[in-house]
Length: 388
Image 1: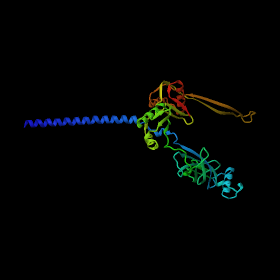
Image 2 (image 1 turned 60 degrees about the horizontal axis):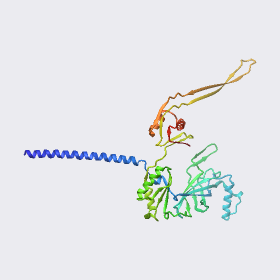
Image 3 (image 1 turned 120 degrees about the horizontal axis):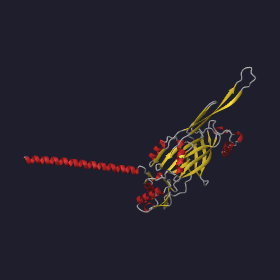
Image 4 (image 1 turned 90 degrees about the horizontal axis):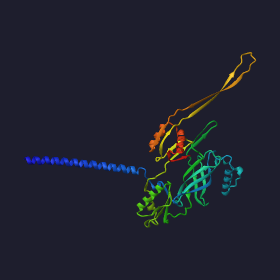
């Protein structure tokens, strides 16, 4: 009986030990998994798709332009433009209607330029968006309709025909003493307003080699892209030509069918390595600092000098019935005020440290532009400084 009790106690202790061991193993596994996920998140937090930082040579939009007329305007069209009257007269004569320029009232008509982007893959019969911009004295294109307008490419050939009612993203109203306007009323769009009549002579699937143009001009990013491409395709198919150009040989299994190749390649994750840069816009006082910008240890003192000049006139008035004359004497008050600023020791190895150090100076964005320029001249700012 005693042996049975000992056996039960031993079994209970063993079960408890195994439970603790299992729980400890589970906690350790959970900690390892969380650490792995954290490291994975950090490593891929800045990764972007290849399609977002590059373009494929030949796969681009082609610009189209045309000149046309917008009609149906409620008195907001061109009022003193001979070009509009002449164009409308020629159009009417082409329709068999004899009308002189003196008989044409162009108040409800506006001369416009029509622009569009034609994708390389657009086929005859498909539709594209167009933008209409007034080139005359029209005050508004609201309510207008674009007449049939041919759109030509750089080679002078007609690739699309545009026509339809305009969509204006604003309004304007005016009276004798006041007016109100929202957005631009002399620029409008026609969604799917042009029909493609001619295709771009480009055969995508017949290419034996593709050229990938990187938007980021950086050797590190380009080399990283080459390695990712070769790793994904399982061979040495990609090679870098310069800091932003990659040549990709089409594998035999994708020749004549490049769409699956591009679908897999354009979604590769790339981590761009941009050069450290600080961009300042003096017109608006905007400052943009890149994440890799670093600052050497430097002492900065920045203070403003304000000079105020006030002009007054002191009038000397003689007594009554005296022979004196009234004399006006100018009085100038000059006040100068200079801020007392102490030296601040600033050093930034990270973006947050750099921002905190510059904020400690208490300078405005306008002042920071001068400070950044001085830091660049002293060699303490480890970044390119670009002034817009």
